[in-house]
Image (cartoon, rainbow, N blue to C red):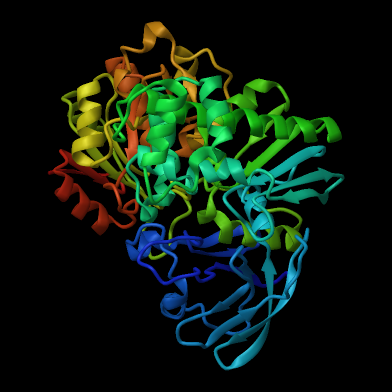
Amino acid sequence: MDKTKATLAIYGIQDRNNSEYPMYVHDHSICLMRNGKVEKFLQLERLSRRKRDNKLYTCLYDILKKEGLLKFDDYDIVFVDNVVGRTFINTEGNIRFEAPLTDKVSNTFEKGKLWWLDREKDAYVVNHELAHISTCLPFYGKYKDNSLIVHFDGGASKSNCSIWYSKDDKLTLLEKSWDLKYLSNFFNANAIVFKIIHAKRCDQNSVPGKMMGLASFGKYSKQIEDWLIKNNYFEDSWKTNKIFFRKIKEEFNYEISTFDQKDPFLQNILATIQYIFKRDFLNYLKKFKNKTNADYLYYSGGSALNIVTNKAILESGLFTDVYIPPCAEDSGLALGAASYIESIKHGEVVHHSPYLNNWGISNDKVEFSKTTIEELAKIIVDRGIVGVCNSYGEVGPRALGNRSLISLANSKNLAEIVSIEKKCREWYRPIAPIMLRRNLSYFSDDVESILSDYMLMDYEIKQERREEISGVVHINGSSRIQTITNEEDNPFMYSLLDYLDKEYKIKALVNTSFNRQGEPIVHTGEDAYRSAKEMNLDALVINGNLLKL
């Protein structure tokens, strides 16, 4: 490995089938880093416009050729594996990588064999688990001494949960296992959960967010938990509903014949499942806290997007601080692998903002005037709905101000227009607010955390403030707040929020991703303009320029 070279990381393992939708493999990505800094990053779905795109092997050659990245000696190449395998072959057959087979999860990279066009080249693999935890590096820097580092998802390479420990700059794998597979199955493989939220197998990657939204309408029940355990959570009940309905009648004397999302009993089932997930994972963390007495937690993998559990971890007092990256799920794997290799080459990586999705975007300069902010504020105050497409897009699944739909947060009706009419989302799904960090304590007494910068925390809103932001307060009185701390974090959004606060006493806005259901978040200005027209938005901001539609 050459310190003078850049690192090109690729997550593109082919799925087990060739269906139109991802099953075991999703969110392919590419990352190019040099001297510890991201130069190019791509979540494939943003470019291809195919949600959760897992077809990188069909287009990798063309994508790299267009960017001038096919040169043989320009960079070290690293791949990320998956539970389905460790081999990458593109459609043309001219990029072929094989990693060594192993039963272990290595705590470092492994050398593999690569044919790059017509020549053999040194290349490496970073296992899925290690790539996940390494997504923390570009946002939080080197792991602090005496840290517990956890990956938890539906399935990595050899586990669905791996526990690591960092001490004296040494990373040690404490455990890898499938022991928590029953918890992740709630969100990606449970028949009854799918049926309650009316999801099909092709919708599995959107199930977790939907389930958390509807679960908030219900309450935990010990009787329901015992009944679910006795029936193995009904996770294999894909073909028939009769047994499920019959057992409800037998156990609870409750008659049910359809999956009505407004049925309180079904809502209580989801609330109970969410509670089990939160409780059991927290107990799992406690076990390793007791073993290591770790001060800090770094946490990644798809399960780290569960904001209810994140809040419970933070409030448990187990750790001095908790760090979760904005791209905790598989969309960050290439970034994690590149960051890991760069940290070995240079000792650490540069601190990054979450705005890294820059592949194919040549102009990242955002220019705006005070007049622009004033005009935009007036549109918002007049109940306008505005799309924002500034600079580079966010990494991960959540819009953080650069690829957002924004509007007033003080109206449930307006929020429903944004969510249901414009975005075509389900009635029960909440939308989030964006605010300056200085206003967080105005709305909530919950402990502050850097996690709110990435929309990864659930906050209980003070009773007396709920009406003020009624559009973004969920049924249980909570809100998934995103904060902007400093002006340099996002100058445009900071200026807008600061102006609205000072001139109109508006301290928060709706912030939801700029896309319709089933579509990726917009990437280019052209994407944004087309989507804004289709959604019939009132205005659009592209790199600071305000367009009234």
